[in-house]
Length: 59
Length: 498
Image (cartoon, rainbow over the protein chains, first blue to last red):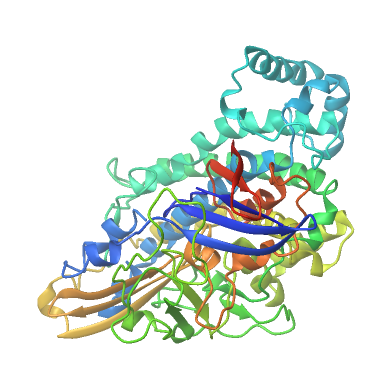
């Protein structure tokens, strides 16, 4: 049985890591991991609600 | 935007609604074409295989499937020359780091050459058509013209400094260009490529639940369910029933995510009560593998009614198809018919990729209709673009809660906001990538990416192109560094792949 890690598979809102176990030429189990913290929810806390769209649309 | 408008009870003007639909619409079309050609096609198309193609036969193939004008032997010979020059230089540039020559590539050389030619054409095309978004949004990406209560740009057919009659014509020209390429290049290519990979219609299905919040709003009611692409939830692949969407059924737990809840990490919390306090407990980088029995991701386990759920074009097309959406049904049935497969084939890697193409075509068809809708509304004398009644914080209640549904190109996106004393007290974004890449939850259910990979054949673990096909079908992107280790965890090889 082989285990593979694909890291990073990134996407627009962060980075992605895939780990898979391969047995008999087929994937037996898989795990997806976001490897970057976003934190934008904490950035907009206590801000004026009228301006948060401009910050959050950067996700 | 919609979350705050919903919390404060703001209704946007008709012009703002239509302009928001147009910005989203052209974004769907451009994003999906870029995804197909530039982020996904090379999982199926062998660039080096294009060198073996006969340009005359390629021209014949292209002319059989479409009347797109760039289809002469001379044209394909020139494209082949470009690829040949790249390969011979040893610097593949945009085509470097592929698994070229992998036995999982099935296309004949001529189909490879045709697809590579269209890869290059799509690069030129996309920079033109997205000018519609840049025009309406002041820039792309990250448009600047949104405003709580509507949009910020004026509309006036008789003003030089507003969205006017000239702008409408400019957008109609771009919409035609957008549609022509999708109808005459993208869809024929998709069908041609898919016909060689039909086994992928039974691989990569994953979780059986599909969600769409609905998009392209047809009235200005906050979070209206009156949308051109309908809202709905499909449970356990049952296309005979579409459940209405209830935002209260969306929850997140952090049993396997690097966050700490103030009470219990296993608790499935609705986003209004959501918490995002970071708590990294994973290994110190560089590491070989994550401890997947514990916390292993920055993505929370997002669930709908407790179920792992896929979002994106496939979910939207399934919800539309099952809801009896006339045009979606026609195009889905046309694609299934041409490939000679039934609706069950949609629950797969190939189905996901086909659904994205279907959505692109039906959306591109709507662009001129929405532009004309904007023109007709302006012609009536309605030039209102922003509702400022609740702009001043003095008009707001002491406390307000809201949520804002949106279907982004990649899938369901909702923001939840709690406003207290004129400030944001809590904010949670539940994004498409989060739904699809979610880790296991407290009950141990796999997320959509994870589930979709189970049973996927991998011919060569050193070149796991099959895994990339399925993951890319959900529309993530970028280079991957792949580490292969044996069962004792010793690293055998390290390769880079795209």
